[in-house]
Amino acid sequence: MNLPVNIPIQEVEEALLRQKSVRVFLKREDLLHEKISGNKWRKLHYNLQYAKSINLKTLVTFGGAFSNHISATAAAGKEFGFKTIGVIRGEEYAPLNPTLHYAHSCGMELRYVDRSAYREKTTKHFEAKYLSDLEDYYLIPEGGTNTLAVKGCEEILSDVKFDFDVVCCACGTGGTVSGIINSLKPHQAALAFSSLKGANFLKDEIGKYVINSQWSLNLDYHFGGYAKVDRSLVDFINRFKLKHNISLDPVYTGKMMYGLWDLIENDYFRRGSTIIAIHTGGLQGVLGMNERIKDKGLQIL
Image (tube, rainbow, N blue to C red; front, side, top):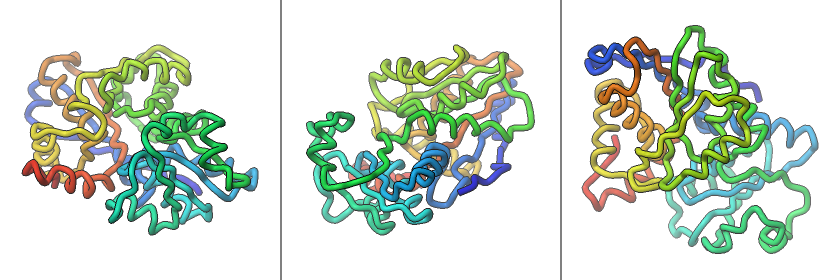
């Protein structure tokens, strides 16, 4: 259950960056594991260790029908010998979409809960109603964020051997960027890009875990909300792939990189800045997203 070390860090070369005298390096967390991708590996790592140490053999977690976390938990369960149960928000998919098909193929049991009931997922009433048939199990929150997840994300920058000024990261539940913030040196700062619309609450969520104030939250590049995209985002992701041979997911890293490029173009960063952007993975969701946007004439490469 050991994490790989020396994850590639690639400098991105573009005329815009040279013009603005800014250097951008992309930390390829998407290459951590073939199926347990990016920050999901980081979040699950210590949780899996703890579950194993207390001899719990069943993992229960939550997510939407296209969730990276659901996919990663299913893959981790298969690889490390856990039974997995995914409580899925919304109606049952028939046939299964690519994310749920993969999770099911890994042995995950899928339990569908309507959206109204799903909002009560953190309550004892929910557990009593929907999980009462289970005996001992290890409960992992939606998105995977808890104290052990933050501990895992504190290691994301541990193998970066050069100095930098700013680290940028996409933000869903706040766990990944919280760990990153905790690992910063005094002269460094973190900039989190929310993939959710109306996500001011993330300031409080991040505040639960962080030990310093060297961070800010950008709410301007959600493209309409979680898992929402438009042509400008898809075009940016495709241009980036063609130019740099690096795939970006449309839910998290694609939005973060779009926002980062826009801020650089508008002189948000001082000249001479060195920026690390975290590629948090999530590429498994591209197939499902392409199914959803094909009627708009859009396709992510």
